[in-house]
Amino acid sequence: MGTSQTAHLVRRVLYLVPTWLGLSLLAFVLGNVAPGDPGRAFFTRTRGRPPTPEELALVREQFNLDDPLLVRFGHWVLDAMRGDLGTSFSTRRPVTEELLSRFPATLQLAVAAMVVALVIALPVGIVAALHRNRLIDQALRAASMLGASMPGFFLAYLLIIVFSVKLGLLPAIGRGGLENLLMPALALGLGESAVLARLMRSSLLEVLGENYVRTARAKGLPGWKVVLRHGVGNSLGAVVTEAALTFGFLLAFSAIIEQIFVWPGIGRLVLEAITQRDYPVIQGFVVFAGTVFVLLNLVVDLIYVRLDPRVNLGSRRSLRGDLGSRDG
Amino acid sequence: MVDATEPPAVDVVPATPITLRRDATPGWEPDLPASLLLRRLLADRTAVIGLVILTVLVAAAVLAPWVAPHDPAAQDVLNKHAGPSGSHLLGTDQLGRDELSRLLWGARASLLTSMLLGTAVLVIGSAVGTLAGFVGGLVDAIAMRIVDVMLAFPNFLLVLVVVGSLGPGLFNLSVAFLLAGWVGYARVVRGLVLSARERPHVETARALGFRPARVVLRHVLPTVLGPVTVLWTVRSGQLLLALAALSFLGLGAQPPTAEWGSMLNSARDSLAVNPALMIYPGLLITVAALGFNLLGDGLRDILDPASR
Image: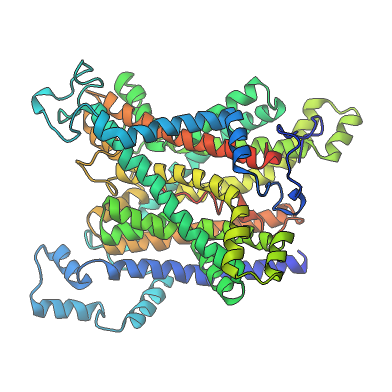
């Protein structure tokens, strides 16, 4: 690592502080701008009836709700840093415990979806690049365009209609064996494979235009060997980076697919929490998912710099940050 | 960058009066006359297909009150899940409402809302980006730090927080999209404005002592227009998908409002009996998103031939 890289590393790590504080503030604001008194909300949810004025005062004291906002924000941040994200209104269990118990299911789904995406994207991207602008390239471009336009939830139901309703081959809901994993992973991974395939195509084309590839060809190395050793090997960097970022999205935003397939992950947990106005769980999810995402972003950034030291340190964001920040 | 075995992309319209290309943002052709832009757009197959799709859907949305054969909310419980017939061309839904009418009205809630939101975040984001890029200094520093922090975590979390605290609904969801969406534009537009500032004619205008407002409006903004149009197209498509997804989850448009995502959600219970109720709105969402993506891709090819 050169000095500029070390400086970059230090700056990136320092950036975590305001980012994380921004996340915590976002989560904190959520619990406090919500209509109604949070103490009243807690009491009503846990006891099933609105509190008397005395009971309300007690609850407010218990949660330090009478302290100034800034003091309460300080407490919330310190608690969150210790891993204490409060108690769920509906289950009365610690939010951290709830999130951690649901996380393995989400992780499993995200890994499976990532496998699906890569298994499709890599060969498709390579074939498209090698047949640039020919019929097969055009067809793959159209297919990836369609894949990027079709919402995951629609694809999920198309799969259910065909494989569960019509053919009766796969279970439509629940988590269990491989047969349960297949459809959710496909519904989640297919859209991502479209993005990755296009990236694989363009970065392979770029590498194949380099001088050293021409040299390799000129010295008589067989075509497929050139493509595999020099082409694919050197173009994987961009794809790996993008895949790692995609993985962060899959972890944090599998909510819709989890909801459809009744998959017991954190996405489903937070959707339940929203309908039940279970603020501590929503807050906890924001901090948890945000932290996972930010850390993964940092790791990707560091890998990226290691893979290609010539990289312009400010430019990676353009890969996705501006245009591709996904909402749903 | 360009494949060595192929000649570099040749401009389809030669002898254009564009000479400033070298000092623009790499690849972007500044000051493309609108008529020329339109001519190139109509010559690009991808863009034309996208444009046709969007035009048809927007026309359907705008004309819905006049062309829809039935009231989209009128229930007829004795005639639910009816197949296609003369009076109900696409059949009826789980409450006996006319499916075609609901799909037409749904184009308003889904497509028109997302285009409107796309325009709103464009205006806010471009205003912030122009201000930051043109004024520079402390304004720029503060604006960009906010943008940095907001880009560091996904929009979805912000949307979740707003909907989680204000409650579900199309209005609250739109507020959330506005709060989250301007950031991407601000950064892109700032970069474009920064590079536009260095261009000869802008420097000249500044040196001549024109008021900043005039310099921005007459000389800087026109150079920003092309990339921002591409961004708007891509962004509106993303907003359409996000809006449909969140409405599907029950966090956006609420029944009985006809909105494609929420129609898909309502059709879940009759999945086995009448899957068509899912397939119609799902197809429309896909086709609309495809329209935006094709148009965006085509526009990019036209405005930035190097990326082809």
